[in-house]
Length: 111
Length: 116
Image (cartoon, rainbow over all chains, first blue to last red; front, side, top):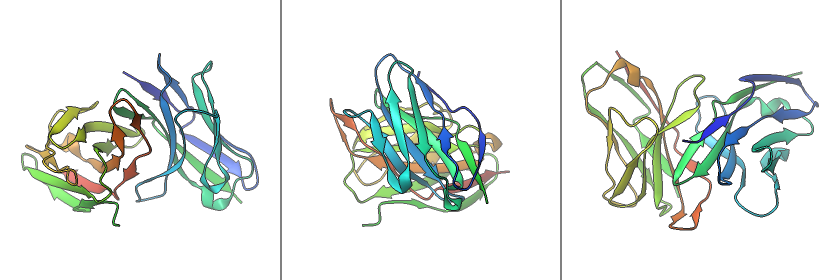
């Protein structure tokens, strides 16, 4: 079975600071990779995805992520945090017809 | 285009009761799935379907049944509810082609279920 590890269940940054949310996965075959965001009492929204091609992918709201096969990582970054980025973020992997999610990272943005 | 809809939004059950969570999508997506979300555990796949008439188990299928008689609908049945099934349930759909994989999932708004 796949595993998806998100380091840090809670991350706190100041407004304007760099956001870095970490995601590592276990897979012998390069999977499809996704980052989703969840605001309180809502469903999940796609931020960005990697399927094939360019390993640096850009998403909505200024987020981007880089697929590093050698490190089995897909970390999410944003150069400058905004108050509206406060939410929970989930990394997900698709392989062999199934989606697997990490346990989530709650991002707190301090004024 | 309503996307993925789920009913009900909230439900309280007593232990041993049964119920069906409804999920429908209007995007003609082949792949549909059910997840439960529990604090600190992310989303865990319960069951999924790659097309009408085809279903398979995910990570946590015990206590849940599904069927897929149409492309649009994918109901989740709890046959005998237990307190351990207290959770938030999400349905999702995505495009799918055999041998070509899939794309991003579209999620419904969720059903908050409490079993007492």
